[in-house]
Image (cartoon, rainbow, N blue to C red; front, side):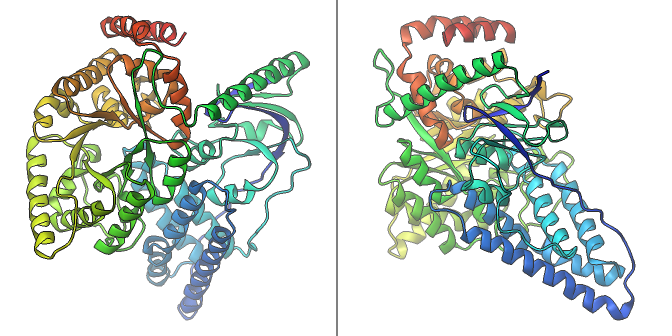
Amino acid sequence: MSITLHGLGIGGGIAIGHAHLVSQADIEIVHYQIPPEAIASEVTRFEDAIRSTRKELEMLWGSIPENAPTELGAFLSLHIMLLNDHTLSKDPIQLIQTQKCNAEWALQQQLDVLLAQFDEIEEEYLRERRTDVIQVTERIFKTLAGHEPIFHAPHCGGDDCILVAHDLSPTDMVLFKDTNYRAFITDVGGVTSHTAILARSLDLPSVLALRHAREMIREQELIIVDGINGVVIIDPDETILAEYRLRQGEWQLKQNALQDIRTSQAVTLDGTTVELFANIELPEDCDLALENSASGIGLFRSEFLFLKEDDLPTEEEQFIAYKAVAESMQGRAVIIRTVDLGKDKIPSWQSESEAPNPALGLTGIRLCMAEPQMFRTQLRALLRASAYGNIKLLLPMLSTISEVKQTRAHLDEVMADLRANGIAFDEQIELGGMIEVPAAAMAVGSFLNHLDFVSIGTNDLIQYSLAVDRNDDAVSHLYDPLNPGVLQLLHHVISTANRLGKPVSMCGEMAGDPSLSRLLLGLGLRRFSMLPIQLLKVKQLILSAEMDYIKPIVAKMLDAEDSDRLRELLQELNR
Protein backbone atom coordinates (compact mmCIF):
# COMPACT_ATOMS: atom_id res chain seq x y z
CA MET A 1 0.00 0.00 0.00
CA SER A 2 1.36 3.41 -0.98
CA ILE A 3 2.24 6.00 1.68
CA THR A 4 2.09 9.75 1.08
CA LEU A 5 4.40 12.15 2.93
CA HIS A 6 4.10 15.93 2.92
CA GLY A 7 6.98 18.35 3.22
CA LEU A 8 8.37 21.55 1.77
CA GLY A 9 8.34 21.51 -2.03
CA ILE A 10 11.32 23.36 -3.44
CA GLY A 11 10.45 22.88 -7.08
CA GLY A 12 12.25 21.22 -9.94
CA GLY A 13 9.20 19.29 -11.14
CA ILE A 14 8.46 15.61 -10.61
CA ALA A 15 10.78 12.61 -10.41
CA ILE A 16 9.98 8.89 -10.33
CA GLY A 17 12.73 6.51 -9.29
CA HIS A 18 14.28 4.19 -6.76
CA ALA A 19 15.49 5.37 -3.38
CA HIS A 20 19.13 5.40 -2.38
CA LEU A 21 19.58 6.03 1.33
CA VAL A 22 22.55 7.94 2.69
CA SER A 23 23.51 7.17 6.26
CA GLN A 24 24.52 10.07 8.48
CA ALA A 25 24.94 8.51 11.90
CA ASP A 26 25.37 10.82 14.88
CA ILE A 27 28.76 10.93 16.57
CA GLU A 28 28.74 10.37 20.32
CA ILE A 29 30.90 12.91 22.11
CA VAL A 30 32.57 11.71 25.30
CA HIS A 31 34.14 13.88 27.98
CA TYR A 32 37.38 12.99 29.73
CA GLN A 33 40.20 14.79 31.52
CA ILE A 34 43.65 15.24 29.97
CA PRO A 35 46.76 14.97 32.22
CA PRO A 36 48.75 18.22 32.33
CA GLU A 37 51.67 16.64 30.48
CA ALA A 38 49.34 15.58 27.59
CA ILE A 39 47.63 18.94 27.01
CA ALA A 40 50.14 20.07 24.37
CA SER A 41 49.65 16.88 22.35
CA GLU A 42 45.85 17.19 22.65
CA VAL A 43 46.07 20.74 21.27
CA THR A 44 48.21 19.39 18.42
CA ARG A 45 45.61 16.67 17.72
CA PHE A 46 42.90 19.32 17.47
CA GLU A 47 45.02 21.56 15.20
CA ASP A 48 45.81 18.58 12.95
CA ALA A 49 42.07 17.83 12.68
CA ILE A 50 41.37 21.43 11.66
CA ARG A 51 44.12 21.31 9.01
CA SER A 52 42.93 17.96 7.66
CA THR A 53 39.30 19.11 7.48
CA ARG A 54 40.31 22.33 5.77
CA LYS A 55 42.35 20.38 3.20
CA GLU A 56 39.37 18.12 2.52
CA LEU A 57 37.02 21.07 1.96
CA GLU A 58 39.54 22.89 -0.24
CA MET A 59 40.01 19.78 -2.38
CA LEU A 60 36.26 19.52 -2.81
CA TRP A 61 36.01 23.21 -3.62
CA GLY A 62 38.68 22.75 -6.29
CA SER A 63 36.76 19.85 -7.82
CA ILE A 64 33.52 21.76 -8.44
CA PRO A 65 32.49 21.18 -12.07
CA GLU A 66 32.58 24.22 -14.37
CA ASN A 67 28.87 23.90 -15.12
CA ALA A 68 27.88 23.79 -11.45
CA PRO A 69 25.66 26.58 -10.07
CA THR A 70 27.59 29.37 -8.34
CA GLU A 71 25.74 28.55 -5.11
CA LEU A 72 27.74 25.32 -4.74
CA GLY A 73 31.02 27.17 -4.55
CA ALA A 74 29.50 29.91 -2.42
CA PHE A 75 28.31 27.52 0.28
CA LEU A 76 31.53 25.50 0.25
CA SER A 77 33.43 28.76 0.62
CA LEU A 78 31.16 29.58 3.56
CA HIS A 79 32.08 26.26 5.21
CA ILE A 80 35.78 26.95 4.71
CA MET A 81 35.33 30.43 6.19
CA LEU A 82 33.47 29.01 9.19
CA LEU A 83 36.27 26.52 9.70
CA ASN A 84 38.84 29.33 9.60
CA ASP A 85 36.91 31.42 12.11
CA HIS A 86 38.59 31.59 15.50
CA THR A 87 35.39 30.55 17.29
CA LEU A 88 35.79 27.05 15.83
CA SER A 89 39.51 26.79 15.11
CA LYS A 90 41.04 28.69 18.06
CA ASP A 91 38.62 29.04 20.99
CA PRO A 92 38.43 25.25 21.65
CA ILE A 93 42.20 25.29 22.18
CA GLN A 94 41.77 27.66 25.09
CA LEU A 95 39.12 25.33 26.56
CA ILE A 96 41.48 22.35 26.26
CA GLN A 97 44.15 24.28 28.11
CA THR A 98 41.99 25.79 30.85
CA GLN A 99 39.59 22.88 31.47
CA LYS A 100 42.12 20.12 30.71
CA CYS A 101 39.46 18.38 28.61
CA ASN A 102 39.66 16.37 25.41
CA ALA A 103 39.42 18.13 22.04
CA GLU A 104 35.99 16.68 21.20
CA TRP A 105 34.46 18.02 24.40
CA ALA A 106 36.05 21.45 23.93
CA LEU A 107 34.64 21.63 20.41
CA GLN A 108 31.21 20.47 21.60
CA GLN A 109 31.12 23.23 24.23
CA GLN A 110 32.00 25.83 21.61
CA LEU A 111 29.32 24.45 19.28
CA ASP A 112 26.71 24.70 22.06
CA VAL A 113 27.58 28.38 22.56
CA LEU A 114 27.31 29.13 18.85
CA LEU A 115 23.98 27.31 18.46
CA ALA A 116 22.52 29.22 21.40
CA GLN A 117 23.45 32.44 19.62
CA PHE A 118 21.85 31.24 16.38
CA ASP A 119 18.64 30.39 18.24
CA GLU A 120 18.24 34.10 19.03
CA ILE A 121 18.44 35.11 15.38
CA GLU A 122 15.25 36.56 13.91
CA GLU A 123 16.12 36.73 10.20
CA GLU A 124 15.27 33.38 8.62
CA TYR A 125 18.07 33.17 6.07
CA LEU A 126 20.79 33.78 8.65
CA ARG A 127 19.14 31.57 11.24
CA GLU A 128 19.39 28.69 8.76
CA ARG A 129 23.17 29.12 8.77
CA ARG A 130 23.25 27.28 12.11
CA THR A 131 23.02 24.13 10.00
CA ASP A 132 26.25 25.08 8.24
CA VAL A 133 27.99 25.46 11.61
CA ILE A 134 26.76 22.01 12.66
CA GLN A 135 27.95 20.41 9.42
CA VAL A 136 31.40 21.96 9.61
CA THR A 137 31.73 20.86 13.24
CA GLU A 138 30.62 17.32 12.38
CA ARG A 139 33.42 17.11 9.81
CA ILE A 140 35.94 18.10 12.50
CA PHE A 141 34.47 15.49 14.88
CA LYS A 142 34.83 12.79 12.21
CA THR A 143 38.43 13.76 11.59
CA LEU A 144 39.16 13.62 15.32
CA ALA A 145 37.56 10.18 15.41
CA GLY A 146 39.96 8.98 12.72
CA HIS A 147 37.50 8.80 9.81
CA GLU A 148 39.28 9.14 6.50
CA PRO A 149 37.96 11.84 4.15
CA ILE A 150 35.71 10.53 1.39
CA PHE A 151 36.18 12.12 -2.01
CA HIS A 152 33.55 10.30 -4.02
CA ALA A 153 29.79 10.27 -4.15
CA PRO A 154 27.80 7.26 -2.91
CA HIS A 155 27.23 4.72 -5.64
CA CYS A 156 23.86 4.82 -7.35
CA GLY A 157 22.76 1.59 -8.96
CA GLY A 158 20.83 3.01 -11.94
CA ASP A 159 19.84 6.09 -13.88
CA ASP A 160 16.69 6.69 -11.84
CA CYS A 161 18.13 7.09 -8.34
CA ILE A 162 16.53 9.42 -5.82
CA LEU A 163 18.72 10.45 -2.90
CA VAL A 164 17.14 10.11 0.55
CA ALA A 165 19.00 11.73 3.46
CA HIS A 166 18.41 13.26 6.85
CA ASP A 167 20.19 16.39 5.60
CA LEU A 168 22.58 17.38 2.81
CA SER A 169 25.54 19.71 3.13
CA PRO A 170 27.09 21.82 0.35
CA THR A 171 29.89 19.25 0.28
CA ASP A 172 27.36 16.51 -0.41
CA MET A 173 25.89 18.59 -3.23
CA VAL A 174 29.30 18.92 -4.88
CA LEU A 175 29.82 15.16 -4.67
CA PHE A 176 26.39 14.43 -6.12
CA LYS A 177 26.50 17.10 -8.87
CA ASP A 178 27.95 14.84 -11.58
CA THR A 179 26.09 11.70 -10.59
CA ASN A 180 22.84 10.43 -12.07
CA TYR A 181 20.55 11.30 -9.16
CA ARG A 182 17.20 12.53 -10.46
CA ALA A 183 15.97 14.13 -7.23
CA PHE A 184 16.57 14.28 -3.51
CA ILE A 185 14.54 14.47 -0.33
CA THR A 186 15.56 15.26 3.24
CA ASP A 187 14.06 15.08 6.72
CA VAL A 188 15.09 18.64 7.61
CA GLY A 189 15.54 22.01 5.92
CA GLY A 190 13.72 25.31 5.64
CA VAL A 191 12.78 27.66 2.81
CA THR A 192 16.06 29.55 3.16
CA SER A 193 18.28 26.64 4.16
CA HIS A 194 21.36 26.02 2.05
CA THR A 195 19.74 22.79 0.83
CA ALA A 196 16.70 24.70 -0.44
CA ILE A 197 18.80 27.36 -2.13
CA LEU A 198 20.99 24.75 -3.84
CA ALA A 199 17.93 22.74 -4.86
CA ARG A 200 16.42 25.78 -6.54
CA SER A 201 19.68 26.60 -8.31
CA LEU A 202 20.05 23.00 -9.55
CA ASP A 203 16.35 22.89 -10.49
CA LEU A 204 16.16 19.31 -9.24
CA PRO A 205 12.87 17.85 -7.94
CA SER A 206 13.23 18.08 -4.19
CA VAL A 207 11.15 17.99 -1.03
CA LEU A 208 12.55 19.01 2.37
CA ALA A 209 11.34 18.88 5.98
CA LEU A 210 9.75 15.43 5.64
CA ARG A 211 10.80 14.62 9.23
CA HIS A 212 10.91 10.79 9.09
CA ALA A 213 11.32 9.90 5.41
CA ARG A 214 14.82 8.51 5.99
CA GLU A 215 13.38 6.01 8.48
CA MET A 216 10.28 5.06 6.47
CA ILE A 217 11.79 4.50 3.02
CA ARG A 218 13.70 1.31 2.19
CA GLU A 219 16.70 1.02 -0.10
CA GLN A 220 15.70 0.71 -3.79
CA GLU A 221 12.02 1.29 -2.98
CA LEU A 222 10.09 3.01 -5.77
CA ILE A 223 9.11 6.57 -4.84
CA ILE A 224 7.62 9.67 -6.47
CA VAL A 225 9.01 13.11 -5.62
CA ASP A 226 6.64 15.98 -6.42
CA GLY A 227 8.74 19.08 -5.84
CA ILE A 228 5.90 21.32 -7.00
CA ASN A 229 3.42 20.34 -4.29
CA GLY A 230 5.85 19.05 -1.64
CA VAL A 231 4.63 15.45 -1.83
CA VAL A 232 6.55 12.17 -1.66
CA ILE A 233 4.72 8.91 -2.45
CA ILE A 234 6.28 5.64 -1.29
CA ASP A 235 5.52 2.45 -3.25
CA PRO A 236 2.89 3.98 -5.60
CA ASP A 237 0.46 1.67 -7.42
CA GLU A 238 0.03 1.68 -11.22
CA THR A 239 -2.84 4.18 -11.18
CA ILE A 240 -0.80 6.73 -9.19
CA LEU A 241 2.25 6.09 -11.38
CA ALA A 242 0.27 6.72 -14.55
CA GLU A 243 -1.11 9.98 -13.13
CA TYR A 244 2.31 11.26 -12.15
CA ARG A 245 3.92 10.26 -15.43
CA LEU A 246 1.28 12.43 -17.12
CA ARG A 247 2.00 15.32 -14.73
CA GLN A 248 5.71 14.84 -15.35
CA GLY A 249 5.21 15.23 -19.09
CA GLU A 250 3.07 18.33 -18.65
CA TRP A 251 5.68 19.92 -16.40
CA GLN A 252 8.44 19.26 -18.95
CA LEU A 253 6.40 20.93 -21.68
CA LYS A 254 6.07 24.00 -19.45
CA GLN A 255 9.84 24.03 -18.85
CA ASN A 256 10.50 23.90 -22.59
CA ALA A 257 8.13 26.82 -23.04
CA LEU A 258 10.14 28.85 -20.50
CA GLN A 259 13.23 28.60 -22.68
CA ASP A 260 11.26 30.05 -25.59
CA ILE A 261 10.55 33.28 -23.65
CA ARG A 262 14.10 33.80 -22.37
CA THR A 263 14.77 36.75 -24.68
CA SER A 264 11.20 38.08 -24.71
CA GLN A 265 10.38 41.36 -23.00
CA ALA A 266 8.16 41.08 -19.92
CA VAL A 267 5.03 42.73 -21.32
CA THR A 268 1.41 41.89 -20.53
CA LEU A 269 -1.07 41.04 -23.29
CA ASP A 270 -2.35 44.61 -23.28
CA GLY A 271 1.07 46.26 -23.38
CA THR A 272 2.09 46.92 -19.76
CA THR A 273 5.88 46.63 -19.46
CA VAL A 274 7.42 45.05 -16.36
CA GLU A 275 11.08 45.01 -15.27
CA LEU A 276 12.42 41.79 -13.76
CA PHE A 277 15.56 42.09 -11.63
CA ALA A 278 17.65 39.48 -9.84
CA ASN A 279 18.60 39.15 -6.15
CA ILE A 280 22.19 37.97 -5.69
CA GLU A 281 24.50 37.04 -2.81
CA LEU A 282 27.87 36.94 -4.59
CA PRO A 283 29.48 38.64 -7.61
CA GLU A 284 29.54 35.28 -9.45
CA ASP A 285 25.72 35.16 -9.33
CA CYS A 286 25.62 37.76 -12.12
CA ASP A 287 26.18 35.00 -14.70
CA LEU A 288 22.92 33.27 -13.78
CA ALA A 289 21.08 36.60 -13.69
CA LEU A 290 22.20 37.41 -17.23
CA GLU A 291 21.46 33.87 -18.40
CA ASN A 292 17.85 34.40 -17.31
CA SER A 293 17.65 37.84 -18.97
CA ALA A 294 17.47 39.94 -15.78
CA SER A 295 16.90 43.66 -16.34
CA GLY A 296 19.54 44.25 -13.68
CA ILE A 297 20.39 43.47 -10.06
CA GLY A 298 17.56 44.54 -7.79
CA LEU A 299 19.28 43.50 -4.56
CA PHE A 300 22.95 42.71 -4.00
CA ARG A 301 23.44 41.84 -0.34
CA SER A 302 26.84 43.18 0.65
CA GLU A 303 26.91 41.25 3.95
CA PHE A 304 28.95 38.37 2.55
CA LEU A 305 32.05 40.58 2.59
CA PHE A 306 31.52 41.43 6.25
CA LEU A 307 30.70 37.92 7.46
CA LYS A 308 33.51 35.96 5.85
CA GLU A 309 36.60 37.34 7.58
CA ASP A 310 37.92 37.78 11.10
CA ASP A 311 38.37 41.49 10.41
CA LEU A 312 36.34 44.17 8.67
CA PRO A 313 36.78 44.06 4.89
CA THR A 314 39.09 46.76 3.58
CA GLU A 315 37.95 49.46 1.21
CA GLU A 316 39.90 47.80 -1.59
CA GLU A 317 38.32 44.37 -0.99
CA GLN A 318 34.87 45.91 -1.14
CA PHE A 319 35.72 48.02 -4.19
CA ILE A 320 36.88 44.96 -6.15
CA ALA A 321 33.65 43.06 -5.38
CA TYR A 322 31.32 45.95 -6.22
CA LYS A 323 33.26 46.80 -9.38
CA ALA A 324 33.05 43.17 -10.54
CA VAL A 325 29.25 43.20 -10.27
CA ALA A 326 28.93 46.59 -11.99
CA GLU A 327 31.10 45.49 -14.91
CA SER A 328 29.42 42.08 -15.22
CA MET A 329 26.00 43.69 -15.64
CA GLN A 330 27.22 45.80 -18.59
CA GLY A 331 25.41 49.04 -17.81
CA ARG A 332 22.28 47.47 -16.31
CA ALA A 333 21.17 48.78 -12.93
CA VAL A 334 22.95 47.27 -9.93
CA ILE A 335 21.27 48.07 -6.60
CA ILE A 336 23.65 47.36 -3.74
CA ARG A 337 22.25 47.28 -0.23
CA THR A 338 24.62 48.74 2.32
CA VAL A 339 25.74 46.35 5.01
CA ASP A 340 22.82 44.91 6.94
CA LEU A 341 24.26 43.52 10.15
CA GLY A 342 23.16 43.46 13.76
CA LYS A 343 22.39 41.11 16.61
CA ASP A 344 21.00 38.54 14.17
CA LYS A 345 24.02 38.74 11.87
CA ILE A 346 27.10 38.65 14.06
CA PRO A 347 30.44 38.63 12.23
CA SER A 348 33.47 37.42 14.16
CA TRP A 349 34.95 40.93 14.37
CA GLN A 350 31.90 42.46 16.04
CA SER A 351 31.58 42.39 19.81
CA GLU A 352 28.29 40.98 21.05
CA SER A 353 25.78 42.92 23.06
CA GLU A 354 22.86 41.51 24.95
CA ALA A 355 19.70 43.04 23.52
CA PRO A 356 16.29 42.29 25.06
CA ASN A 357 14.81 41.90 21.56
CA PRO A 358 17.43 41.53 18.80
CA ALA A 359 14.93 42.10 15.96
CA LEU A 360 14.18 45.55 17.38
CA GLY A 361 17.75 46.42 18.26
CA LEU A 362 20.90 47.76 16.63
CA THR A 363 20.53 46.41 13.10
CA GLY A 364 20.57 47.60 9.48
CA ILE A 365 21.06 51.32 9.02
CA ARG A 366 21.04 51.82 12.80
CA LEU A 367 24.30 49.90 13.13
CA CYS A 368 25.79 51.91 10.26
CA MET A 369 24.94 55.11 12.11
CA ALA A 370 26.54 53.70 15.25
CA GLU A 371 29.69 52.65 13.32
CA PRO A 372 30.36 55.67 11.04
CA GLN A 373 33.92 54.62 10.13
CA MET A 374 32.74 51.23 8.85
CA PHE A 375 29.87 52.91 6.99
CA ARG A 376 32.05 55.56 5.34
CA THR A 377 34.55 52.94 4.21
CA GLN A 378 31.75 51.08 2.47
CA LEU A 379 30.31 54.24 0.94
CA ARG A 380 33.75 55.15 -0.38
CA ALA A 381 34.18 51.70 -1.98
CA LEU A 382 30.67 51.87 -3.48
CA LEU A 383 31.22 55.35 -4.91
CA ARG A 384 34.55 54.35 -6.46
CA ALA A 385 32.89 51.31 -8.06
CA SER A 386 30.08 53.49 -9.43
CA ALA A 387 32.50 54.79 -12.06
CA TYR A 388 32.44 51.34 -13.67
CA GLY A 389 28.70 50.78 -14.04
CA ASN A 390 25.18 51.76 -13.09
CA ILE A 391 25.34 51.36 -9.29
CA LYS A 392 22.56 52.56 -6.98
CA LEU A 393 22.66 52.51 -3.17
CA LEU A 394 19.97 50.95 -0.98
CA LEU A 395 19.63 51.56 2.77
CA PRO A 396 18.27 48.72 4.94
CA MET A 397 15.81 48.87 7.82
CA LEU A 398 14.87 52.55 7.57
CA SER A 399 12.47 53.80 10.22
CA THR A 400 13.09 57.58 10.41
CA ILE A 401 13.84 60.38 7.93
CA SER A 402 16.85 61.39 10.04
CA GLU A 403 18.60 58.14 9.02
CA VAL A 404 18.35 59.22 5.37
CA LYS A 405 19.58 62.75 6.17
CA GLN A 406 22.55 61.39 8.14
CA THR A 407 23.40 59.07 5.24
CA ARG A 408 23.28 62.03 2.84
CA ALA A 409 25.69 63.90 5.11
CA HIS A 410 28.12 60.95 5.14
CA LEU A 411 27.84 60.68 1.34
CA ASP A 412 28.54 64.39 0.87
CA GLU A 413 31.72 64.17 2.97
CA VAL A 414 32.97 61.04 1.22
CA MET A 415 32.22 62.56 -2.20
CA ALA A 416 34.11 65.74 -1.29
CA ASP A 417 37.14 63.70 -0.27
CA LEU A 418 37.06 61.68 -3.51
CA ARG A 419 36.85 64.86 -5.58
CA ALA A 420 39.76 66.38 -3.68
CA ASN A 421 41.85 63.32 -4.53
CA GLY A 422 40.80 63.20 -8.17
CA ILE A 423 39.00 59.85 -7.85
CA ALA A 424 36.15 59.30 -10.31
CA PHE A 425 32.65 58.33 -9.20
CA ASP A 426 29.03 58.80 -10.31
CA GLU A 427 28.12 62.31 -9.16
CA GLN A 428 24.40 61.52 -9.69
CA ILE A 429 24.36 58.17 -7.90
CA GLU A 430 20.86 57.33 -6.71
CA LEU A 431 19.96 56.58 -3.10
CA GLY A 432 17.06 54.29 -2.22
CA GLY A 433 15.57 52.82 0.92
CA MET A 434 14.22 49.46 2.00
CA ILE A 435 10.60 49.55 3.16
CA GLU A 436 10.49 46.76 5.71
CA VAL A 437 9.31 48.56 8.86
CA PRO A 438 5.56 49.37 9.09
CA ALA A 439 6.30 52.97 10.16
CA ALA A 440 8.36 53.50 7.00
CA ALA A 441 5.61 51.93 4.90
CA MET A 442 2.98 54.28 6.33
CA ALA A 443 5.22 57.33 5.88
CA VAL A 444 6.64 56.28 2.48
CA GLY A 445 5.57 59.59 0.92
CA SER A 446 7.77 61.51 3.33
CA PHE A 447 10.68 59.16 2.74
CA LEU A 448 10.36 59.62 -1.02
CA ASN A 449 10.91 63.35 -0.57
CA HIS A 450 14.48 62.40 0.39
CA LEU A 451 15.03 59.22 -1.66
CA ASP A 452 15.27 58.45 -5.36
CA PHE A 453 13.49 55.09 -5.09
CA VAL A 454 12.24 52.49 -2.62
CA SER A 455 12.33 48.70 -2.51
CA ILE A 456 9.82 46.68 -0.49
CA GLY A 457 11.38 43.94 1.64
CA THR A 458 8.27 41.82 2.15
CA ASN A 459 9.94 39.17 4.32
CA ASP A 460 10.50 41.56 7.21
CA LEU A 461 7.59 43.87 6.45
CA ILE A 462 5.11 41.00 6.79
CA GLN A 463 6.86 39.64 9.87
CA TYR A 464 6.85 43.02 11.64
CA SER A 465 3.32 43.91 10.51
CA LEU A 466 1.80 40.65 11.78
CA ALA A 467 4.10 40.29 14.83
CA VAL A 468 4.85 36.74 13.66
CA ASP A 469 8.20 34.95 13.86
CA ARG A 470 8.29 32.67 10.81
CA ASN A 471 10.77 30.42 12.60
CA ASP A 472 8.44 29.77 15.53
CA ASP A 473 6.39 26.65 14.77
CA ALA A 474 3.68 27.78 17.19
CA VAL A 475 2.83 30.89 15.14
CA SER A 476 4.51 30.46 11.72
CA HIS A 477 1.14 29.52 10.15
CA LEU A 478 0.05 33.12 10.84
CA TYR A 479 2.78 34.47 8.54
CA ASP A 480 0.51 35.23 5.59
CA PRO A 481 1.27 37.47 2.58
CA LEU A 482 -2.48 37.41 1.87
CA ASN A 483 -3.42 38.97 5.19
CA PRO A 484 -5.77 41.90 4.36
CA GLY A 485 -3.68 44.31 6.42
CA VAL A 486 -0.52 43.32 4.53
CA LEU A 487 -2.18 43.89 1.15
CA GLN A 488 -3.45 47.30 2.28
CA LEU A 489 0.07 48.25 3.36
CA LEU A 490 1.63 47.07 0.09
CA HIS A 491 -1.01 48.93 -1.91
CA HIS A 492 -0.32 52.12 0.05
CA VAL A 493 3.45 51.94 -0.58
CA ILE A 494 3.13 51.11 -4.29
CA SER A 495 0.36 53.60 -5.08
CA THR A 496 2.11 56.41 -3.17
CA ALA A 497 5.39 55.86 -5.02
CA ASN A 498 3.57 55.70 -8.37
CA ARG A 499 1.64 58.89 -7.59
CA LEU A 500 4.89 60.70 -6.75
CA GLY A 501 6.57 59.38 -9.90
CA LYS A 502 9.30 57.55 -7.93
CA PRO A 503 10.39 53.98 -8.79
CA VAL A 504 9.20 51.25 -6.42
CA SER A 505 10.36 47.64 -6.56
CA MET A 506 9.88 44.53 -4.46
CA CYS A 507 12.79 42.28 -3.51
CA GLY A 508 11.18 39.96 -0.93
CA GLU A 509 9.95 36.40 -1.41
CA MET A 510 6.56 37.63 -2.69
CA ALA A 511 8.19 39.04 -5.82
CA GLY A 512 9.48 35.62 -6.86
CA ASP A 513 6.24 33.74 -6.24
CA PRO A 514 4.53 33.24 -9.64
CA SER A 515 1.16 32.69 -7.96
CA LEU A 516 1.31 36.29 -6.67
CA SER A 517 2.66 37.95 -9.84
CA ARG A 518 -0.73 39.05 -11.17
CA LEU A 519 -1.82 40.29 -7.76
CA LEU A 520 1.27 42.49 -7.55
CA LEU A 521 0.64 43.76 -11.09
CA GLY A 522 -2.87 44.71 -10.02
CA LEU A 523 -1.45 46.58 -7.02
CA GLY A 524 0.61 48.67 -9.45
CA LEU A 525 4.02 47.03 -9.08
CA ARG A 526 6.14 47.19 -12.23
CA ARG A 527 9.57 46.25 -10.85
CA PHE A 528 10.13 42.77 -9.40
CA SER A 529 13.39 41.39 -7.99
CA MET A 530 13.90 37.71 -7.18
CA LEU A 531 16.24 34.71 -7.32
CA PRO A 532 17.57 34.36 -10.89
CA ILE A 533 16.03 30.89 -11.20
CA GLN A 534 12.53 32.40 -10.68
CA LEU A 535 12.77 35.05 -13.40
CA LEU A 536 11.39 33.05 -16.33
CA LYS A 537 8.55 31.55 -14.28
CA VAL A 538 7.35 35.00 -13.25
CA LYS A 539 7.86 36.33 -16.79
CA GLN A 540 5.60 33.59 -18.14
CA LEU A 541 2.77 34.71 -15.84
CA ILE A 542 3.24 38.32 -16.87
CA LEU A 543 3.20 37.53 -20.60
CA SER A 544 -0.20 35.84 -20.24
CA ALA A 545 -1.69 38.57 -18.01
CA GLU A 546 -4.24 41.17 -19.04
CA MET A 547 -4.63 44.27 -16.88
CA ASP A 548 -8.32 44.79 -17.74
CA TYR A 549 -9.01 41.35 -16.24
CA ILE A 550 -6.65 41.77 -13.27
CA LYS A 551 -7.63 45.20 -11.94
CA PRO A 552 -11.29 44.50 -10.99
CA ILE A 553 -10.34 41.31 -9.14
CA VAL A 554 -7.50 43.01 -7.25
CA ALA A 555 -9.92 45.80 -6.30
CA LYS A 556 -12.16 43.15 -4.74
CA MET A 557 -9.15 41.69 -2.94
CA LEU A 558 -8.37 45.06 -1.36
CA ASP A 559 -11.92 45.15 0.00
CA ALA A 560 -11.82 41.56 1.33
CA GLU A 561 -11.89 41.11 5.10
CA ASP A 562 -10.28 37.69 5.53
CA SER A 563 -7.54 35.57 3.99
CA ASP A 564 -9.89 32.77 2.89
CA ARG A 565 -11.81 35.17 0.65
CA LEU A 566 -8.51 36.52 -0.66
CA ARG A 567 -7.42 33.02 -1.63
CA GLU A 568 -10.65 32.45 -3.53
CA LEU A 569 -10.08 35.67 -5.46
CA LEU A 570 -6.43 34.76 -6.07
CA GLN A 571 -7.53 31.51 -7.71
CA GLU A 572 -9.87 33.50 -9.93
CA LEU A 573 -7.05 35.92 -10.72
CA ASN A 574 -4.72 33.13 -11.84
CA ARG A 575 -7.33 31.20 -13.78
